[in-house]
Each structure stands twice: as structure tokens, then as C-alpha cells.
Image (cartoon, rainbow, N blue to C red; front, side):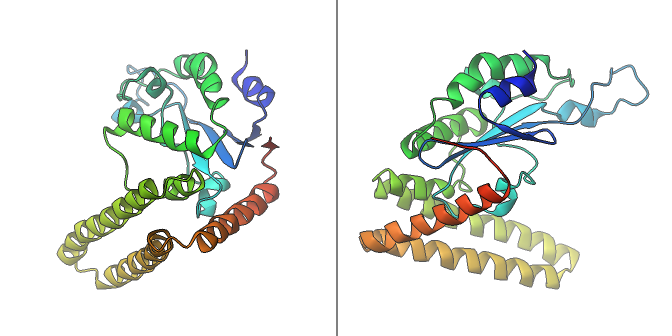
Length: 242
């Protein structure tokens, strides 16, 4: 079956190599096709950069999270996971061989797998499992799972995700700080400092609501996120499948 047809039959909307749908209780799913064409290694056009290309990637997100708009509009460029992750294997770069194998894996394993992810608890389970396969760790950047854990009545796990994100934010800040100091870029430093400080304040606000046990405020917060994301999804005409 043609890959585009497979995605459309399963309720995804296609837009320039990107496929999105929202299923179940606020579960956003995206599949991304790389636009690179296969170039034989013997060709003068071939370069080592071709070895780094994945053909298909995918991602799973919670609409109860404070999602940046570039994820919903597809400008993120791709998802964090590769089809081979579904087999319990980490993606390894190699000669770019086109799309046949990735498409086969998505048809045989990917689509059936995505069709089962329809609750916030399943979002958490799927993202954490795939992260351990691909990255061998739980990513600090997956703070968006905090709200999914809140919705799933798992506040302790939500706090852990926020704590991890705060740590990774400042770890990356100091790593970049060394670069800016070495290159003499003070203006970039102040912009970075302002961005990290603002995100940290937002994270501590959510952390405080969870730690304080203020259920009403917490539920109001994640519901506001959901409504905002739902409006964006409607604007981008992403199908919502119940």
C-alpha cells in the first residue's frame, strides 16, 4: 500500500511530507517523511551527510502539555523516534537507502502501535519506552510528559519530569556559556539567560502546584493547555478522532 494512503486511511492529515492526527484523550501523533532522495555512494553528488539521514520519524505528544506551536504546525522538522525503535533497536546511521524499509516497519509495526496510544497513561508509557531504546535514557526535554502524568493521576512522576527538565536546562545553559565566553558573544549569553530563567520560573510554578496538592489549580492549568492546543489543531485542520 502507498504510504500516504496508509496514513490517510488511518485518519492522518497530510501536509508536505508531514502527517498529523489527534486520537483518544488528547493524544497528538505525527509522522514525518524526509525529503532527501537516495544518492548512490559512487555518485559525484554523494557526501557523508547522506549517511545521517533517517527517512521516517514519528512523535507522540500530550495536548495537556504546554506544547510549543512549532510542534503542532510541523515546523519541528521531525519526530524523536525512528521506526526501528519499535523493534527495540537504536537507530544507527548508514548509507541512505531510501524509504522502503522504514515504510515497511511503519506499516507492519508503527501504525498498529500508534493505534493503541489513546490515553495519557499510554503516552507516558510509550514515550518513556521508546526514549530508553533510542537515547538510552529518559530525556530531560520531555517535561511535556509532566502534564500527561498529572492527567494520569501520577503526581510523583510529574515532579520527577519537571526536576529533570530544570536540571537539563541549566546543564545546557552552562555548556553553551563556555562557548559564548570563548567566542566573545555577550549578547547571546544574555538572551539565553533570559530564556532559561523564564522557562525555569514556569516550571517551578507548575512544580509548586503539584507539590502543594492544589488539585483545582492543577486541573485548571492542564485544561487551559488542552483548550489552547485544541484551538491550534483546529486552525491547522488536524483531524480529531475520538
